[in-house]
Image 1 (tube, helix red, strand yellow):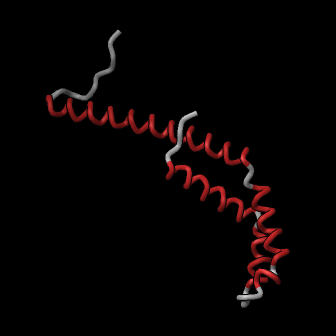
Image 2 (tube, rainbow, N blue to C red):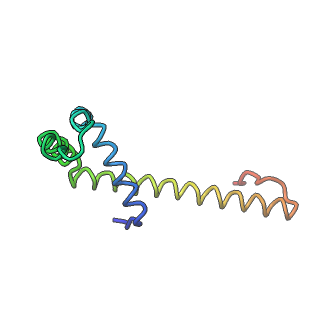
Image 3 (cartoon, helix red, strand yellow):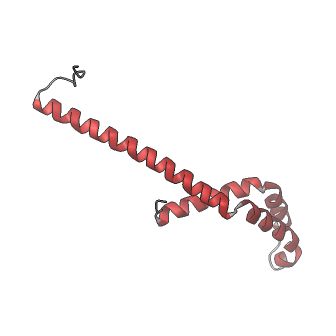
Length: 110
């Protein structure tokens, strides 16, 4: 398996967290409603809703799901990287042909 940079790992975690928040939207909304207007009493009054929200997110963000997201990211990165390298090589070859005064690449003869 290819290694991910720290930035890539952080991007994947942020994506996973946003997906988990969307998945657990009802729990998040219930906690937010409970927390509105509270300061000191928040940990005591909303503990059950906080626990439900955190439990939902923990259940959603399993290690298997994170590993699958990493593999998908690596596959996507590798494909995009390959396409970008091919496009760069083609543009450089075209530029060299123009500089040399050659016509566009002719079809290969058999």
